Image (cartoon, rainbow, N blue to C red; front, top):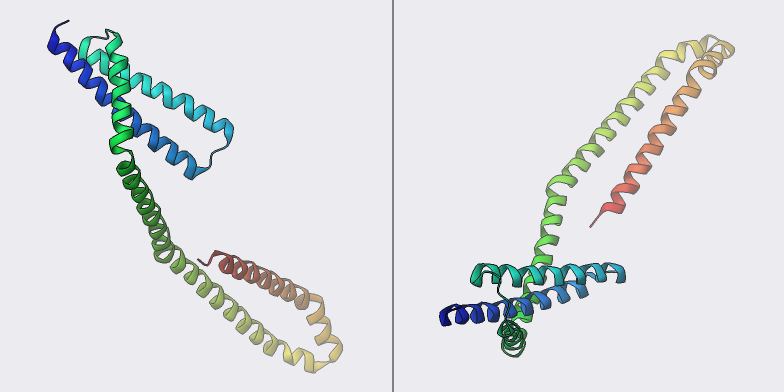
Length: 193
């Protein structure tokens, strides 16, 4: 291997070590923020180190056709140490600001979607239910007025028609609409942000 090939390999391993340090800090920061269970942390650790291995050996395959020498590990170690000594604080500060900004943007997007999509649909649904209940009460009142002559003809005939055919279905419909209305209003009250 030529001297320029060795220098390119050493430089690429320095960059790989620096990248591994950044990836490690990113992974640990995300793991702390997400509060993962222990078994998932083990799986994530395993996947992290596998990905770092692929990063190093993929870089080696491109730079020097996969030849492993002792200075490769020296370059990786130096890159990691340089990152931790010089860039870690600055990178963690930037990473935390990015995470905070991303969470803020996510919350704003969710609230905007809620107020632009869900609230108008809920208002429309409430208006529709109100109109239906109003029309039902109007029809019920008109029905009572239409059957009033039967009630005046004789209390037995009018009461018999009302109690036999109309009273139970209208009470069931009223209860059904009241139950739906209570469920809807309870759901809407629970969904307020």
